[in-house]
Image (cartoon, rainbow, N blue to C red; front, side, top):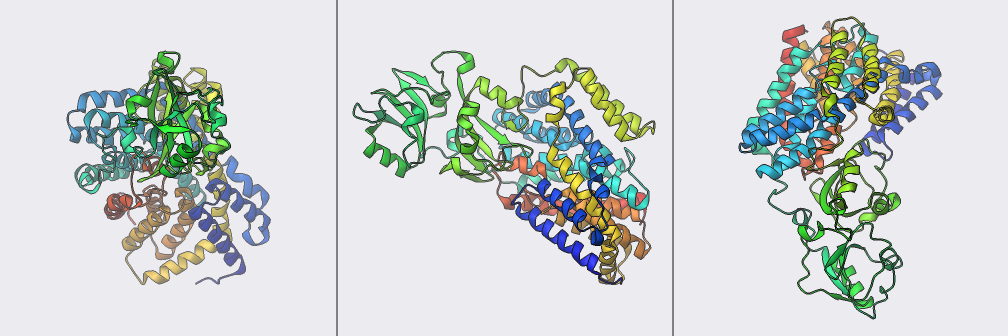
Length: 607
């Protein structure tokens, strides 16, 4: 066993701090990655990472390729192709829950091999919610399988996920063997089919129906006790004040959602509206705050004050289709810049002309002090807004609006062009005519030149958090090799294996990487585990490439927690899932894939 030097101990300390920050997330994980990069450069005598190597991750072929794939995926998204297919699935298979499940799984898994799986799931969430409303099947039965299939589908080709692209870069550096476009497609197909059969047969019995589709949104978000009507008396201090000012000085957890005057309902923008005697106010508040308002502010409870979906989704002062109010579910995307903000700091109501009535975080619905809650990826907001506002939210990549399959501004005429560009990018790289880095960058130019993606959409299409994460972590892998940390860990693994067969060691690497990925970033798992896997394979006389593949596939199958993979976070709120639901469905599948993937790697590549 090589000696445990000061260099190695210091690097392990950096890794330990980074892993702690990845798990607890006091700051976004991409900021943690930048911190890792800075620490490695600052401690160069021990980490062996100079400034040029430290920032080299930003110019890495992996980082630039992932950036380009985000833009190519945006071209497909803007064409509306997947939304159109989703509408056809709803129409064709709406009467058969099993056929509907198969179609949804096939669409999710099949497209994720050529389009980054995060935007695939972003597109499919509103599609699944719309299908659920039509067929009566709970979205809880569909959304987690969609996320899992998108993960597995991402392993069909090199460009399906950023994990594979990064792993290819690390593999090229360590063993001189980058991945070709269809290097592991045969393994990806086996894994995808295995997961699909499991999710279609065993999955439905393991997933609970967390959301009842026959409920109104008011009931689904448990709003019955938090929405009520009050009448403004003549002696109320509210009279003559604007809606915005009326509650500003009061220490109560309440919002005025709607104002009704002479049988005409007024909603957003509601802040400037002046309150008059006899106005009926629809309040979102708890019982304690309601009693405070009734006692001190000259308000009376309205008779039969029960608020329904239909009452809130009514026409406003203009009596115009564009100003008709609707209740919709809006999911916070994992790449949203507003994560960590609150509704108050965002000034959400005035900024978006929309009222948030409740927040669903997994299986928990939040009503109290919503303005003070820090927003998280995957949070589902129950929003009351006009059709114009809903359309703006639908066009914003930071939000996923549930149940909205189509938009009037989809570039459907560009579908053949967008598909042709993606096919050319993949085909030219697969044929060896040009590296994927070059074809992907050429694809960006083609997407903009043909109008599939507008110039101002190029930068907004990129998930910069992922780009910074990749760039920040790449030097960590370099330091693992240069300091000997990877070799030392490999020697510990070999000593612990106790003479196990190489196939068993390969399976253990897969399982351990999969478990690590469920609590830290999948890209961090690849950077940390591939160097150790390569050194372990060389130490036991096995094929290093087989071990690289095991780590790569395992890092893309984080199925035990909602935080292990971005697509899991995206479905967490809309599905109303509990944390343990992922273990219930994902645990058996994780073990099944450990066996299947290990044996298939041995079958195709040996060990």
